[in-house]
Length: 321
Image (cartoon, rainbow, N blue to C red; front, side, top):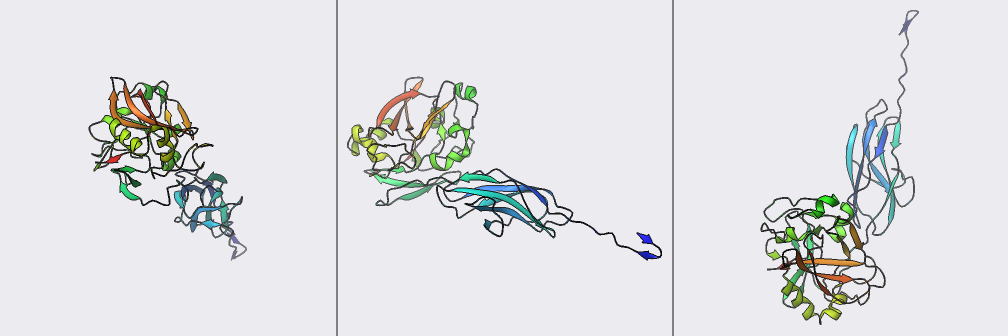
């Protein structure tokens, strides 16, 4: 403004940007996804933004690892990499302008325990239509997936409905899937839970060159491993990273690396027994309402042969054609 024949410049006061932190998702043993939302630039251009993280609270860009995810205001997504398995981290979004760096609210998360494959065996790989890559293992005359199926599409590209509502799940007579507890964080380790209608759909839930095993093919597997009374122990992942203690008989000598993905009930759609039970469909029906499956339990070395209602949500393993 002008005073007594001279101009006086008004000082402009800048503040650090204001940013919030996005909840952490897609957590694996070594990676996770977060991000933030720059809701105010503080009056100056935001020149850097991202997420910083550490095993100690209140991480900063000076004291921890951080991402760099563009400039300016608004939302952004950050991929956190190089994490250590089974470790708790603290993360905060940050944004920087000429006045300094502002930090968002702190969030914490724990990375997953990695799947423990048999280090003495040689695994192959295969890929599904979603791009998920699986380890595979040859057992006797059969080659099996060594991880639970994660696909969200049939072989022809059609989407498999993701049904989260329990009442709707109970009424289904067509294919559907879900993640345990409807939490996508369970995908990486335990894969999906599918009803039998998805297994039986002619569009094929299995990747090209693979199929959901028949009841007879499951029996071929357990027979090769010494029979039902001991096969469960040879199929289960060893240790108690995912199976509850005592995980009786578990050696994973077959390389199958069975995990306790739990199940979804046909009546009401509730979830049960992750950590203590694993259940896998066969493609073989047992009457109009049921189908054969295999089940493993943390407390026994047995490989159980059951039939259950087709509306149950069970894990799926595929075998090569």
